[in-house]
Length: 177
Ligand code: IMP
Ligand code: MG
Image (cartoon, rainbow, N blue to C red; front, top):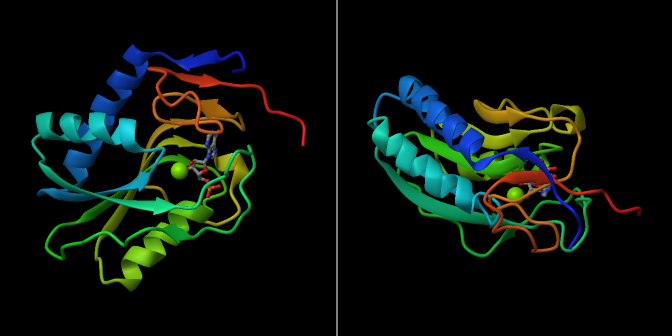
């Protein structure tokens, strides 16, 4: 595996996730239906739902899985749903949670999918936002950290399925095409 340069420590992530939960609780009056985008969001989601609980908001959790990079560092641009569509109740606001918004294609696709299936009041949340890479305009309601165009791993986020178990967020060198 390649060298990893630390971007955010465990402590910095925990602090920011706590703040995000407070921001979300302030914006959403009741309980939430959380839809996590697999696989990259699972560690963030696990911490976020517990931080939300401390902030007074309980959540129900579902997942959807989208196509990913495969083993490469560049997305193909085509986003597809892999596996089943999550069960979404219509009585709670939906919070769509992803690890990274990069081109914006994935989260825009997921939001449209939920809308097309009748979900109302969909809010979006990402741990990391790379606005310089945007191809699809999408308003992300809650952002953990805004970062430049780096390739990030750790805290659930992978490069070719490696590094997900790192407790912190780091950067790995981009490989030549
Ligand atoms: P988008 O559709 O281009 O916004 O891509 C979003 C998805 O690509 C994220 O949910 C990640 O799974 C993946 N991704 C984007 N940037 C990175 C990165 O720096 N490291 C690892 N995965 C990434
Ligand atoms: Mg993802």
